[in-house]
Structures are given as C-alpha cells and as structure tokens.
Image (cartoon, rainbow, N blue to C red):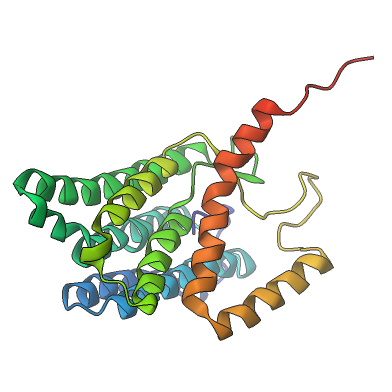
Length: 258
C-alpha cells in the first residue's frame, strides 16, 4: 500500500528486517501472479495479487508499531508496489484478454500491448508522485486512484468474469477500456478517501468508529460467501468514488457568507 513511514531509528536490527520481509512477500506474490498468468491460471494470478495487497497493507503498520521505519523501507515498498500493482496486473490482463486483440488485426494487437504498458507506466508515475507528496498533502485523501486499489479493480474483474464463465478473448474490448481507465485514474487529480479518519492532529489513524468496525465484519462475511463478485463490487465502488466526489464538489451549492 502507498503508506507513509515515520522516520525513526530502529531499536533492533532483527525487528528491522520484519517489515522489509513482509514487503518481499508481497513482491513475491506479485511475481508469482505473472508466472501464473503466463501459464493460463488466471484465477490463481488474481488471488496472488490480492495476497500481495494484504502484505502491502500490513508492512507499513508493522514498521510503525515496531519503530523500524526507514527511508530504505519507503523506497523498497514503492519498488515492490510497482511489481505487484503495476507490472503484474498489466501482464495478467494482457495474457487474459489484451493479447487476443491481434485477432482483429496487427494494429489492434499493438493497441493491446500498448494498453498494458500504459497501465504499468501510469502505476510508476502514480508511485513517484505519491513519494514526492509525502508530508505535503492531507493524509485523509489520495490524489488519484492508489495502485493497490487499481490492481484490485483489474484483478477482481478477471476473477469475477472467469467465475461467470466468460473468457478473456470474449471480453477483450471491455478489458482494453478497463485497463486504460484504471491507468488514467491513477494519474488523475481525483481525490479518494484514504480511510485514515479525522483531520484532527491528535486523532490516531489506526482508530476507527464502531460502525466502521461493523462494516468491516459484514464485508468479511460477504467475502467468505462470494469473494470475486464482492471484491469487484467494492473495487468498482471505490474507483467510481473519486470521479463522483469530484462531480459533487463542482455541482454542490456554494455556501453563502452571512
């Protein structure tokens, strides 16, 4: 996850290895997803990227809790994210659907791999922009769709469509549009909630309201019942939330000063 690390001196070299080990596990899951997609195991590839997202979500928290944050960890996390949420989703989508664009002509075949590259490039730009904005933006918001959420949108689509019995070759144009849209959302200026709570300085970002905890439990239950469709619904809702919030900001009535 695109998380912020506090710069603190590590207390223990052995503990210091833990967050970087978790980051490595996430990168390995992304790498494995690429291998699985090349072998035609698209459901396994999709699950591997979601596993990478889980590791990505906890490595920063472990670093903060153990006081083992470092500049090295920040940079390593970004490089791992580029593999797991930039290259891996692009290549999974390419092997699943985009490579079949060549069935409609050599030009469209080039459009297919170009879309996959566009996604990877936008993920790299998104991560670079995030790193340069750390400490200068409101922690409550991401500017542009964060790369793990974009990868989640891509992979939940692949996983859910496989569950519905659709093949990538049949959905190649839908996959093309989705890949380009997710790429552009990552480098957009739309604001997405980071779920980091209040803007009050004394408010800890790890604290969540009781209602939010209940919502998390409900989502977990739904995931156990039907993971691919629930993940697609959640990822789609979050991806749309940025443009919808931007539209609402433009059309909402301006408050009148007394």
